[in-house]
Image: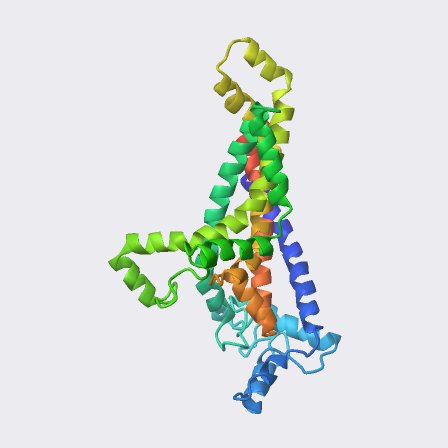
Length: 365
């Protein structure tokens, strides 16, 4: 198993590299060029703009070679200051700094400087990660739990009133766009009824989430802050899970129906085993493989849904940061988030293969 994981990780490296190349080239080809962000800020001097552009090999009208140099600088294999593959210390730039290498680029854990905030991109992403993981983690637990329970129950009670009700609601929620559902929930529960907050993760007048002031206040009254965060989570989580529960409950039902019709399940019933044991120990475990495939891959794509949801509910996570980066033409910020999302998708594919072996002892790598 360990050798298989190592082999899969090695295979993922060229995939991530290709994604990074394509993403970078597409952004460099965007109208306006890298300097477009600076044109919106008259307080930045031309000298500061020139220093920033030179630091990352950025040019106002880049050709293919200039774009390759820019990508090499972002990756960490090209020294933009010296204009070559060697660092200031005369060693290959991709080597660690303590071995004489450079200090710029992804290989040195440097994703560049955000053009709009003048802060390191990695710091911005790390700062926003907790809010995104709280939203996605909560949504994932609720989504998977309800999808499995509804799907298994609908399969066991096939064609019953419960099954038909779940089917009807699944078709309704699956056809609702995420952005429309979020706006409707805000209008009903925040504007009309006034029961829940419409935006953010903390009260508007409270300290910024994940700041030192916030954690100081959190330690003073943890239960109060947890309950308040729970209230802010209800609407965005409901928006995220509604469509996923509708889709995956049907998927679980289909997989369970196929398994319940197998000979070994009928044999277990004929032996007089309790119904609950037949359903969960014999049928559900063998129905897990296609369910694992769907769930693990959708975890990664949950991030794309979170981008829309975080924007609608002003949730201070990576999704909203990504939209801000696009609006501000913040090249390195967008590249950093795209890279994190790509790593997440590839990781979930590897996790799916590992979970296969855990769920089904017949699978060996």
